[in-house]
Image 1 (tube, rainbow, N blue to C red):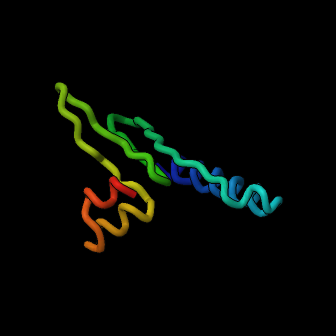
Image 2: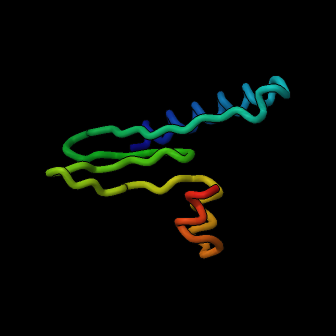
Length: 87
């Protein structure tokens, strides 16, 4: 789990440095969902508006929530899910 978190931090740092190199890069970004299976356990890390799901026997369960403004506003009760989908 620590190695997965470190890899995401390194990727973030490299992307952030690239953004700062040139003003044209500043609005660029990325999302990621990564899973590491180790000793029978699954470690999930994510950033951005991507989400991880567990699918078992045809049923899906969302494991993560997006890191974006729309979902932050829904969680805060500022807007509804329907309003978020219209954004």
